Image: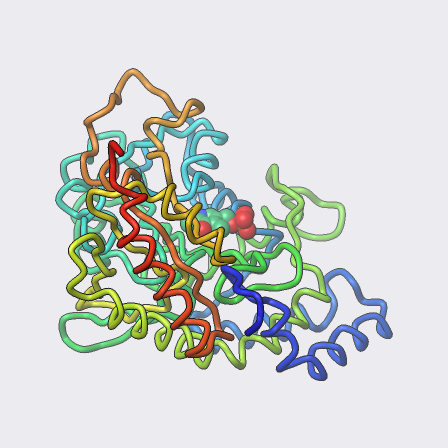
Length: 383
Ligand SMILES: *Cc1c(COP(=O)(O)O)cnc(C)c1O
């Protein structure tokens, strides 16, 4: 059996090796390393895949969020509502731009923004909502879109973890995650579902004017060569990464299907276990399983993680600390106990390896390891 990894990028590469090698070599031969034709082609491919008018490639997912907020013209002091249970990047850019992060709790089943909490957090100074499509499925966008419409707010979808997922509206209509709000962002960090071999990111929007603004901001605020109309940033996707992403985009749906097979295997192995809660599927979204995240009950999951590590099974805790309890984000507005769902999740979740190259032997070994760890009672809290 191959070594088990959280994400096995080499095994995935081996299957498309010839195509990737050729794509990379072609860029080297062309020497069009920056803004080469591969970047334009990837942009067009992704526009088609997501069914959006504009894709704006950039350097990473954090930049994409920043460029989106700058493009929307958010001003210091404007309040931006986002989830307390997310990767730090979401709140980081809000704080860096001197906007005011307003944190809200998440839904215990989907780990995504709770629309009731969002509604309650809206004030006269709220300008935007940033739903995070966490672990691979969408936030409840229909309700969030409705709030945004009634309160005249922008929606920036942080889609770093759910690229390829479909949102299913109550009338049955489907739309790709990230293409529902005013603007969506993603990351092509290697371990993301659509990952390159370095850093990369993109924004998506159907708004022509906003797309033009974001494109300009990502390129030093330049309207034409050496004419700078606004203060921008330097944020580019390089041509080699774009060429790799073009190859991998063709396989993205297959990759999601492989991840769903892994999730189904785990569900089946752990359903009914009194110490584990398997991840729920939202009725309104497909799931692309960026992470397979269990909630544990009455056990020490760090002891579980150590036990699994002793059997060469990696596991990770995403995320151990809610944003409002992070040192950098402490704020007199928030204290322990304010976001009970997020706090409970941060105290109980553990994510198992999930990627496109797992076989039944590997999955059987992992599930046996998890069950053995539970039976060993090594994990019992307060032992
Ligand atoms: C990965 C990630 C980001 C940041 O992407 P980078 O490319 O690493 O900058 C932002 N938000 C979420 C939810 C992420 O998972």
